[in-house]
Image (cartoon, rainbow, N blue to C red; front, side, top):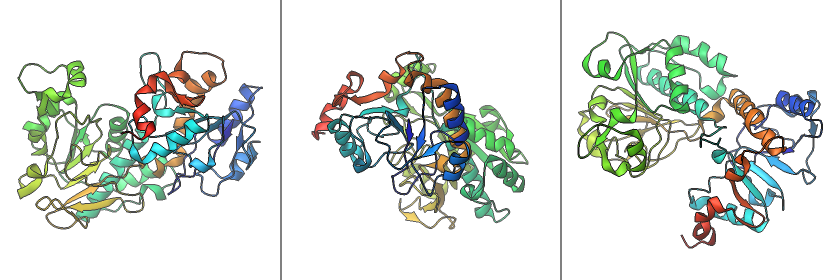
Length: 399
């Protein structure tokens, strides 16, 4: 098994397995050898792998399985190998069509982390928690920059989560009101940060009805921010299958929100939450949006592009719909970094690797077979696999 050097630009510092995890696996599975392609920018140095007895090797052609994090450059793909990485092809992303075409042409088995699921369809490996952790931290950092009351070190300048938590001791939000949408791993990470910062959690009902003399946050589920168009009780299963039959119910919460942290999954057919019309005129108090889900041209009008780790904030003029500088008077400051876990790469990698070791490596090595690898294989032996046959027109360039 080989761990590839990340080739996407800007390079991602995360790794699928840490040096200690590699050592543990080679001790546990005597027939397994792990080699690592050298890299100058990983969060774990070559020396850290070497110190754990892991071989560093530029040529990975002898490996059966190759693992990375982000998409591998087409020219770096080796014919006939099995690869695991986030390919961003299964939703017909136009910018990666050529990548999938190369995978098929080179008879590569592409196993996409996003589709590694258990028998109940639940994802087994993800960086979601860390997106929530860093996204919420960035939201609080933006609040401090806007108010001038406190200053937090950028998350990517912190060594690990412990240093982030130490930084949170500086947070002074006054009477800021925060709304968090979503109930999965991402929202869980955001709540972890808000609680560490000492922000009081209140129920959605109290958030709407009561005033507080200190900072508060609430977490909203779909049945809070959406409702059936024809009336009646909310049915989550029905909402998932028929999102087009629901309408926006977020505005009552938005009218009492200063900082909106979006952590929910959004289906394009589901209701838009904040349109430009909602935001124009200054009737809503929302002045900061931490769009951790980062849906461009999606449910939140102010998210007009992704931002970067180096420059995480930009401004949105609600009247013109145009981008401005962040923190200017009358604008909404947006944080929409689309690779948030990369800001705390050591912790995120360790968490991700633990899940791989427990759930995926035994399947790869044939120690057990629940069909997980098959379900996550987008292509194999020079063609799409049956579960991903719907990509045929995309692969051929017809859509």
